[in-house]
Image (cartoon, rainbow, N blue to C red; front, side, top):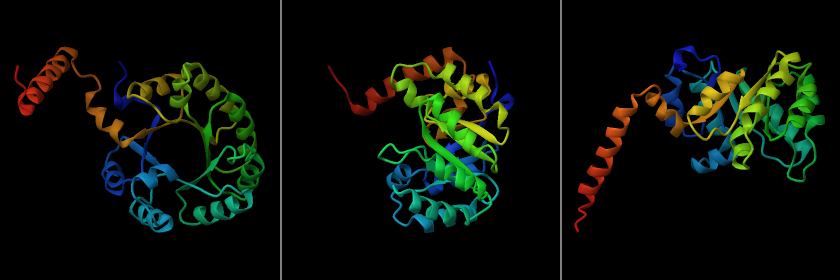
Length: 238
């Protein structure tokens, strides 16, 4: 069993809860942070820029991904350049297409040439990895997010796909592969085994890190105790 201390894959916390992000910032296991508009909305954020600037001030020394939200490429570029100006540790998240299915590659290429660090997101195929990484290839450090968890939701095994994506990126050393949308803590070790560079993990999943390596007999007993305690608290009678 690989211990957390021996992991090569970098763990990025995925969320937009300020208190949770600052708490995880204190963990040496968490090497960076990612957000998206859905997570921000769920966290009750209404002022995008105020939230982003506050977090960047509080966490100035680890990568933080902040996503554009326009559906028009010209406006996406304006937003991307503005967001990038907020800090050297900012990676601007660009969706792989807009909502009409039109490719973001021309924008990605232009931003890479302008020196904007990007995290191109919402990938589901190796073709997307191949084409976008080529557009990022001559630019600054960048990431591509392949949503392995959503791939798994379609009854496809994401592990071979992620391994193949690692190989596709071998010719672009400044582009890192993100295992996005993991469904269980075990995915951290899957990502590590295939050589994935980064995995984004939600705050709820990160709370389970203390279970890694736990004795299974002990865990079984803890589960039995949980069921018993909840039955007593509920006052169940027959």
